[in-house]
Amino acid sequence: MRPKDNLNLRLCQFFVLFVVVAFLPCRICLAQQADKENAPLPDSPKPTIPETKNFFARWAEFYRRDWSGTTASSPAPARRGLPSPLDSPPFPNADWSYGGSPVIGEPDTNSYPLMTAINQAGSRTKVYGWVDPTLNFSDSARRNEPEANDVYSNRFEMNQLVLYVERLPDSVQCDHIDWGYHLTALYGTDYRFTIAKGYLSGQLLNDHHQYGFDPTLEYVDIYVPQVAQGMNVRLGRFISVPGIEAQLAPNNYIFSHSLLYAIDPFTDTGLIATVKLNDQWLVQLGITGGHDVALWTPDAKPSGTFCLSYTTASVNDNVYICANGINDGKYAYNNLQQYDATWYHKFSKTVHMATEAWYMYERDVPALKGTIQPETGANSAYCRTGEQRCTAPEYAMVNFLQKELSAHDFLSFRTDFLDDKKGQRTGYATRYSENAVAWSHWIGTTVQIRPELRFERAWDQKAYDSGRRHNQLTVASDLIFHF
Image 1 (cartoon, rainbow, N blue to C red):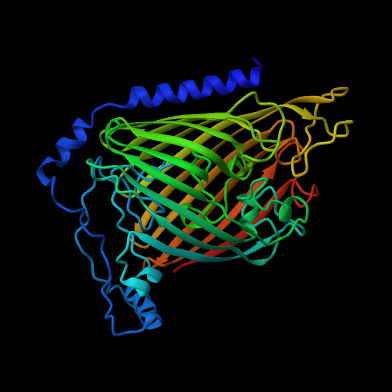
Image 2 (cartoon, rainbow, N blue to C red):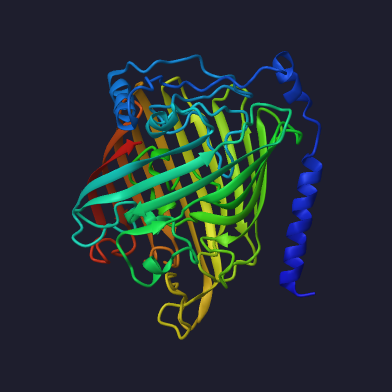
């Protein structure tokens, strides 16, 4: 049997064993639901706008009420599990985040302007999105790379125009299997941070377009309450699971991204199971085709993901560790072997931090100026003299510190370090540091403004402004308009 066949067999056996072991009676879940066995799931808060108004009038009325603070509120629906540690808004999420699944036990309480205009937010399938224009001023004349998302210097751009169509599974109840799905259409300069080889990737890898389109997320969710305290199985293309930051703009503390984020995996295609063992422990196991590649490309290979999440009973701390996209590690398009750890800590009602560190590598990366041609869209490595291939490692760490000022405002301070030891991810073999301060301000719940000041340095060689500068200073902001 070939080594690759052995790897496939071991991954499949591991996944089957994982599901069998986790398939335990949902006793705790049923006890939590016993007093309301026949009660329907509480409705999400929905603004009531007279049906006599036409579609556009109802849409405009939603914004008028949202911005004036006169939107009617209703009691929050029951959730199953620990309470949410954060206020959202102003923060992007109310819970310590994990990827690959909706928050198990949390009801869908979101109402959106577009759905309210369509049908008074009366359906579980929801259509919504946002527009995210940005502006940056930089002392680099050409490009801001490896900074993300504002790659192009001194520009007004459309980073993201996004449309979602989704249905979330009902993971509060414990008596029947439920399902959901998600589709994303993204257009803008940020398509370069979501594109995967095989998914319309020629517009970036071959044509180098500034603007592009990416069908970023396409997956189905199957929620099975009878496994432990609930299991969600996701099948399709989804965001690579570990990390504080995400590809979609509203899910981040700050407009720009850390150096750590800019070079790690973006999306995976495959299957991942998320099992809530109890209120504090959660485990994930997945098998994908590798990072940022479609299953039908030559670069795809069976790759395992394993994650474990622990939250303290006080909800003041969460630790989330992942081994992500693990296979033989040999050079292929973004075939990164990633080991990631995230720690969230809440100091007080208004102050919390999020810290992430990872180590990544690829084996047999072609040497810069060697005789082996690298893949299109993937860098060579600064190997030792005489080497045609070498292992290219990198490690990074980032910390976000947040202070909530009001229900509409918070400040965020970010410190970031990256060592691209062989230059395979950024094109320059150097250590980087970055510091940023940002203010996030909400107008109602539908408009968010995020100005920031950022300074970064490449310590071992010039890596900014296309290799002309050691340092870079940027002032930037985006404006997220939700619809």
